[in-house]
Image 1 (cartoon, helix red, strand yellow):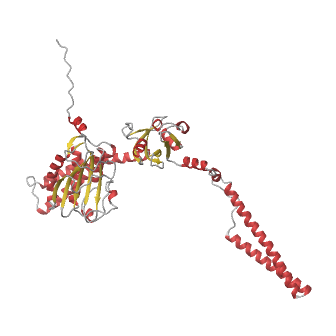
Image 2 (cartoon, one colour; image 1 turned 90 degrees about the vertical axis):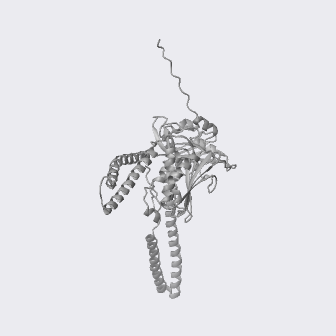
Image 3 (cartoon, helix red, strand yellow; image 1 turned 180 degrees about the horizontal axis):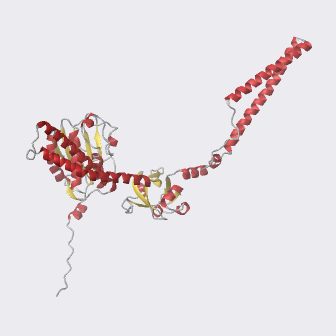
Length: 489
């Protein structure tokens, strides 16, 4: 660690300045008094005054010269000290300044040209990649940075953030990547952001990437997720047993209880059910975080799927006297997505086929529908389907209280709940929307909310639509492997 810069002389302090002024004033007074007395004794009052004035002028000039020399010497000493300091010598030229700043940054910084070759690589980035900085210069980024996912599967060109920047011209962030070091083949968890460098014509002429080693953070998150998963799994068993015994106690064929005791048991049973749902949500979110969520995708025709699901969900809304409708087409929906999935604006009629696990999709729609029922006091809830050649869009629209604009960006975060009267009077873990987002992203989809206070909310889900060719490939049965004939005689 470099030593701090020390000044050999300090600028004059306030007390030093006051002391110097008093010294000069007293000295002038004494000298003027003596000169006046000499003039009076020698040649009268007029000569004394002349001597005094001449002496005052001479003494003031000498004092002013001394003061200026003193202050100038201190200033020059301070200036020389600043110019001779180590930091001044390091930052004396623009090239030295940029090099020093790059090496002082703890995050890895990588710059590539239009061909993907590395032109700038600081020591932090070289350590992450396991390369010597000089050896990595002018090499293709593929050769230096070996990216893979959490399962160790190497990134394809479509997943590589450097390639994505050249293809899209937009900044790409990836918080789930791993880099395999060149020297030790060790996997390092990294969080990176790759941004494009554009010319006057908005063409990508290079990239700037910032990489950070987040191995410790990932390990801490893994341990937390493992604890939550283990605790949730272990606590589900006794909670299920308690719920079972309470159900038996409420069964009139098994036990006889009075109405007051029955009301207590009903409340206990309801609380136990909520506790079981909380443990289930914790377990599901933990599995979603580390990729252990059960997933059995198949071809799903969304129109028929939603029609049947709406009929099943209708009874939940009827308990609050809410109307439920199933809308097929473009009424009330927009297929324009604010994020990655983009399609044309020409809407075509179903059939809408996607490739997803129907049970997982049912879990998402049911959760969104339950939220709409929970926060809607009166009116109706609409489940809609629309889409185009590339996108299948599902939306759940309610006539509830809506939400403030500042709450919308946080809705799909873990454990986030709105702080209002409605949320305080209804139960919930704050994990439902987080799990829904994880499931939708599992199928390369996206989910977002549009809402306005007092006018309800609409949750949109965009999923990739299967092309005719892909639908035929996934729908056709696999050819049976011929059974080898036996050579028995």
